[in-house]
Image (cartoon, rainbow, N blue to C red; front, side, top):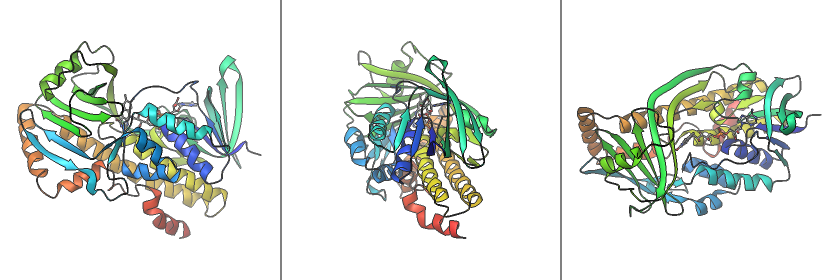
Length: 400
Ligand SMILES: Cc1cc2nc3c(=O)[nH]c(=O)nc-3n(C[C@H](O)[C@H](O)[C@H](O)COP(=O)(O)OP(=O)(O)OC[C@H]3O[C@@H](n4cnc5c(N)ncnc54)[C@H](O)[C@@H]3O)c2cc1C
């Protein structure tokens, strides 16, 4: 007897959502997380409409909307002029906005829901160190506090253990891709701009500034940096915000700051045997563009649903695994390309490139084609963006 129908390794945002979705399908879930406490970093902030639709399916869309800020528009600026505006209110969803909510709050809401779900057994302080696929189940071993060992098994495993996934490594799944040379610095400040719920992008010869409203009167700024500035930026962020966007944060309370590099990495297969890779364990892409965590949410949704299909023996395993790999890889590739385009177009500097980019942006934002950009940022044009939008097609494919 396996310990659970579904084992989920990693209780980041993707793992917790995967556990909730699996429980909603009536499955017994074991959720293992190495850290003893939830981290408090702001990190990913943008939740797009397809993800809100997934969250609605587990009854959480209302709580998320209550705790976040609905960003209904974004304005673009050059150093001295307004280039145009994007309006998200035409998005084809009940949620006609991108929700801005810091990742620690996303995780807090998900954890609260996980803890109230009797069919999820959630164990913190459990680090998985090995994973082995067997005849009728998949087994993990690991260590917990005081060096005690644990052994668990599940009929299927959803690996949501992040970019350095131990499960992926244990199964010998290689990754393709490489780090990007671009680096960024982000900081969350008290919002003194008066820009309300609007996102703003500034494109200058020295690089870009992206700025998003956050709940509780805060605002996120992201700037491209010449090299990785990890901590103690020695006023770099403030100086660049003033030069590039005319935002003076001197004396303004800063809540958080983090430098980050960009990686484009994709696992060569998104599933193997009884294991599905979801979220960062399957793909890493530029955080600029805000697509990675959202892509992970859709991975979790499909993996949980397909695991149920397998448990109920509604389709043969090879068909289900092939479908997951094909569908989610296609979605991740599309999201990664978009994130890359948004990052390169927005963050490249230099006088000539900047002038050309800003002229093109001005024209683009004044013709109906700008709707393509709205769809891209809102992830509406990602193939199979969530189950609600492609369930019929997937069911047909499984019956072939
Ligand atoms: C500074 C920064 C800024 C970012 N900004 C954005 C953004 O603006 N937009 C965006 O979309 N994305 C952004 N990202 C990326 C985003 O945070 C990730 O895509 C998201 O966290 C992925 O969620 P996940 O659940 O797949 O992985 P993770 O959040 O990495 O969670 C993995 C979990 O698994 C646990 N774990 C790992 N190994 C084991 C093990 N062996 N055993 C048990 N548990 C394990 C970890 O402790 C962790 O809790 C940012 C990332 C960083 C670092």
